Length: 179
Image (cartoon, rainbow, N blue to C red; front, side):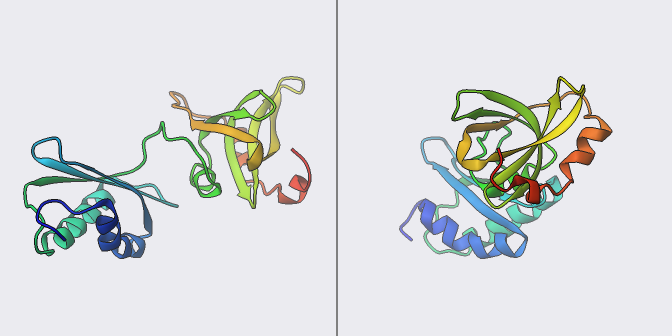
């Protein structure tokens, strides 16, 4: 590594194994040398949410690994964080990790759908939506290929028990060929 800051690729190569052992993967590394001190931000995600204790532990490990490399400028701030709530969901793993969360979808047919993420099986998402005719919750299967955009919604109240129960129902058999 040259004097100064490591590259994004170098940070990922250096830290990837440590994060993987902890059950997380590095989604992105952002290096900003324009600020003083320079900032290295490591964005990690996993099947379990990053809590403050885990972030602190990963930060200590990452800092030790970076500090052990000769030639890295010691005047930088390291930040380990999770993807923000405004990050678009773009892959099956993102939907799997968002299970139980309320999301808004823009579909290829031009419609917008809001619902709670249920099981993701293969390329099919189970979405718990309000059925206005039955005045109850129902599960709608949506092919991931039909989703143009998906964003987690911020909630200020707890979902109903029925809605949460439906996020756990395995609808993979029903999902075959249906959207």
